[in-house]
Image (cartoon, rainbow, N blue to C red):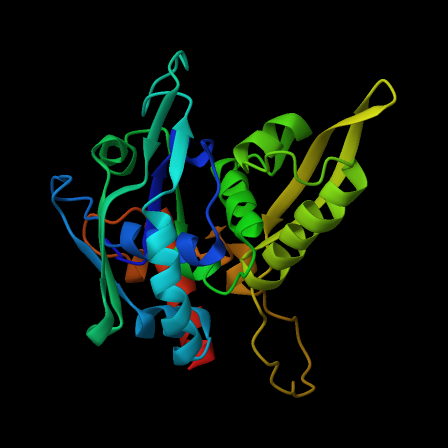
Amino acid sequence: MDPSLIYKSNALIEASYRLSVYEQRIVLACITQVRRDQPLTDQQLYEVSAQQIADMTGTQLGTAYQNLKAASERLFERRVTLHEAPNSKSGGKVRLTRWVQTVEYREAEGMVALRFGTDMIPYLSQLTEQFTRYALADVARMDSAYAIRLYELLCQWRDAGQREVSIEWLREAFQLEGKYPAIKDFKRWVVQPAVDQINEHSPLWVKWEQRKTGRRVSHLVFSFGEKAPEKPQKQRKNKTKGKAGSDPQTSSGALYGIPTSTIKAQAQPGESYEDAALRILENRRSASKS
């Protein structure tokens, strides 16, 4: 399994919490290290270095180093409100817990090590049909915590291509706690910047509109889908007589813009086509940036 993929229970995706963008980066970098083929315990220690954060985000090492310590200290205090158990369909329980039980800052190494909280383990390990998966590279260059959260919420409904949420629910999920009470400010400082960053940095395009209940704006409707793959530079065609051939990439099936024949050829043993497609996409993006 590609270690750069993030897996989260849908209950965790929809949980109410607030993390800064640097806290998000630390947590997500650790989640990518969770092995799907081995038992996860609350004694496992995960390490993230300033160099990793700098490489992941394209920022300067000094900037990453300065933010890593402060973010790791805040992360220890962060709480999360979970509205149902992993894989539960009842939704009857509300659990208040913390992301991590231990945070170590190793100043000489420019590194953070953390242990996830005991109550968080099932939301990262006991994943069956109700989970969301995406590539770390999809959000690595976002500098808005709201953009990362919104991206996860869209990925959860990736096959549907549309998601409608109430503004009240979104405020609670983002833990805004009274910030941006005016809807115009909420849209200007939360929604639109998040949408702009998803469109700029992720493999999804997204647009949104508002819906009213009576005279009050009550819901946001997000429409989204996979961006068209970047077309390779066209070679100059020679003028020849005869019937033009068809493009094999458009005449056969594809997943995330990658031909199924390519996915089949590059899939690793035991890897699903979707996992393989995500891995290939990430490898292509990494190669294009190098």
